[in-house]
Amino acid sequence: MSEIIEILKEIKEKLEDMDKRLRRIEEELFEELSEEELEEIKRDLEAYEKGELETITLEELKKELGIEDEV
Image (cartoon, rainbow, N blue to C red; front, side):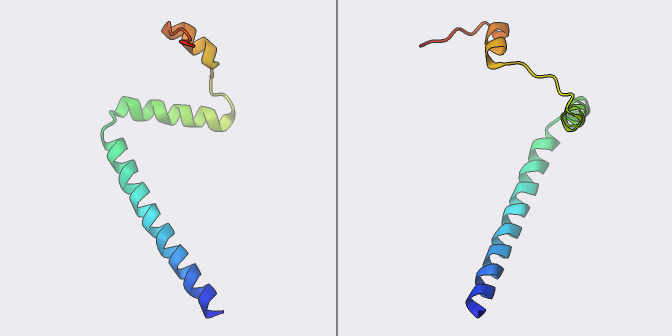
């Protein structure tokens, strides 16, 4: 039983470390964004949550960007 507790403690510590790392990464990424970019991201997230995010297919994107399949 004590082995299980030790393993759970290790898992908890690793998850806490991962959480700290992710927070640092998020801070670094979002510090570089302008207010306008942050607002755009917020609008996109809200639209995604409401199921209103406009999407296009990969083929449509390739056409829009003028990318041809190289195969």
